[in-house]
Image (tube, rainbow, N blue to C red; front, side, top):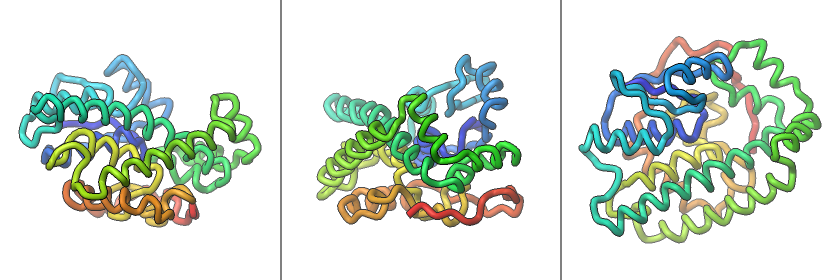
Length: 264
């Protein structure tokens, strides 16, 4: 069986999960613990980022490389159109989604994290040790802002990213007004990239992610709850309903997972 090394709340991991579900491929999720688990990822793939897909002896890092590998190895339900023009548009849009929505939504979320102590622990992987959860949750908002400056995510950067994301969503709404998908008359890599990478802006409502119930359907204030972007999020909801598999209920959920969280 395919093995996906991931963070549950990594948008790039979600992009791959959408693709695997669309292709009907069975896979096992392996949650990577930040820090320690990333050393194992490095030994396996030569780099520390998720997602990483293991298919027998094959190890593939990076969501785009994984998508292209899956299209070659498992060609049913292709992700990338054969038509040259559609193929070009698909690859351009996927790259844009990676570099725009993927990167900027993290910055927007960081702005929300700086204002919410409980949100920080809610978004940690469920395998994160309790002591680390307590430590992360106890960091004052002022210190988070200072740390943001240190990594290049100060308030001005967050504001700029927020404005850019809103423009991106407006453009996507216009593109989706009278069409079911972004590029072709069927889903492509572009659709799954845009849908998966927008996860941090508003979490899907259904039982698709291993997150607290109070997070489902919630997101960044001014974005997730704005009627201006309803066309986009409704489209994404339909894509999930059609192709994303729901989680199998389990009684072994981590007992330390947060149960109370307010975002909007």
